[in-house]
Length: 84
Image (cartoon, rainbow, N blue to C red; front, side, top):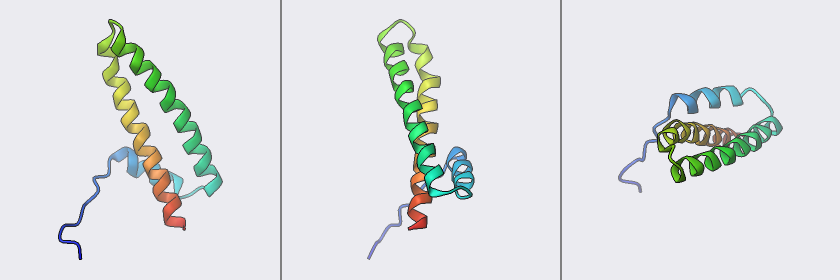
């Protein structure tokens, strides 16, 4: 028995991505995850360069992009789980 129910806080990015991904095939959802994963890898590399160099102020928008990408992958995983 759970005493506390953990409630997920869904961002606008998560809700929008989930709504859009619910209308496409599972193969398309996986392709979307693969593409998003690739972009997130590039974003992490740019964040690393920003934090190591003199451009630390450029890291904040990149970190926000990273969070948005994570939300979209989470939405994709949720859509795939709902289909199981």
